[in-house]
Amino acid sequence: MKVEMNLDNDSNNLVQAPTNGNSEKLSPSTLSSLLGSKDRYYLLCSTAAAAETDQVKISDLEGKVIGIYFSANWYPPCRNFNRVLIGVYEQLKSNGSNFEIVFVSSDEDLDAFNNYRENMPWLSIPFSDLETKKALNRKYDVESIPCLVILQPDNTKDDDTYYDGVELIYRYGVDAFPFTKEKLDELRREEKRKHDSQTVTNLLTNPERDYLLDQTITRKVPVDSLKGKTVGLYLSAQWCMPCVEFTPKLISIYQKIKQALQEKGGGEDFEIVFVSNDRDQSSFESYFGTMPWLALPFRDPTARTLAKYFDVQWIPCLIIIGPDGKTVTKQGRNLINLYQENAYPFTDAKVESLEKELEEAAKSLPRSEYHAGHRHLLTLVSEGSGGGPFICCDCEEQGSGWAYQCLECGYEVHPRCIRAVTPQSSIEDRIQLDFSRQLRDVSHERFSADMATSPIPARNQANEASSKFPYKKKKERIVRQVFCF
Image (cartoon, rainbow, N blue to C red; front, side, top):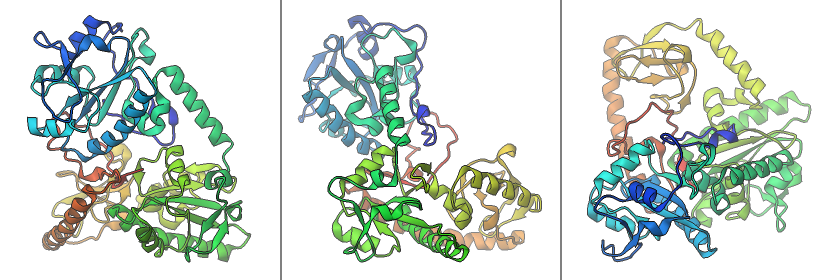
């Protein structure tokens, strides 16, 4: 099941999986029909030897909470989640929790399956059992990986039977166990309580630290100095290419907002706090040295606390905190890309006003244009006429609402990025642009190879290896971000 996060509505993170008819208790016979075959009544044990001789009876899983884990070695997001899941699994097992995971492979061959399974402390469906793997994919409507379907031992209620385990593990870790509706409701109530009592002070301080660092990295700035200001929490890292590309834009917008507020007077102010996910102190200092704002100290435990508290799964991420200390939006980066400095103060009322301005401005735009760098005619569209969230093919940043779209190939650009040309010059510019992008892609491939060796979990959603993934795909909003924390 494909689950799309809605960062503005916590309740949407909890997704019921299809039950395919009446629920049934996970008895030994039910488990055998689900995880076994007529010729196989066992699962493969975890083993460093990767041999298909170490087995455990499927019936031994009776009475346990079971996670059916769809994953593949070739896909970086799976490998990244695998590391997180191993930590949660081992902690739950050490606590004596009645939990087990069964791996369902989408690997390309037996060697890849064995190599991937070497690091897994749980059970597996044999790679050779294609029919069982296909049946599980169909039963749970798996459209993307990684996917973790949670089965309760007493499967008698449709409303708390299966939940999307990937999001729950990322969001709550071991606290999500035993993944029941009651437990998840309790966690959501606790989250709401924390958000209701949220202040900039309790967000950014801890018992050992009540300060932030300025650009010198040596001078300490009291966190309390941010009270009454609009604050952006900027989660980013130097090794992350989308972060490195977005940071100069954010610096420019930050300086424009600060200047406008200074000219306006009245004491209103805006500040940004860098929350680093860099690999080492030198990288942190080098990256932070380019920024004109404040920062949490490198590897301060508050960084991970914030990532978990705001359910951050992608960087770069800009979270906006209002003057009252409450969260305004988690979509600060998108608003910067869409509206630049005009996005300030990032409130719903401001965004609504900007959207109305765009609607009004769109009335005077040409209905179609030829754009430098694309050979086809582009047509002006809105969300109501075939448009929607997109990545601009010119500036490569997110767009929403109005766009110029190629009805032949899906190419889309912001109206502000249109460079109107004649059809012939459009083709010539396209040839030059293709060559420039080839050079850029070589650079990105080198970066990606380096990132793949990083000990920090990371994934670039815009580079999904969808051609390898056998399941049906839906049209999705693509955001060029990197997974981390």
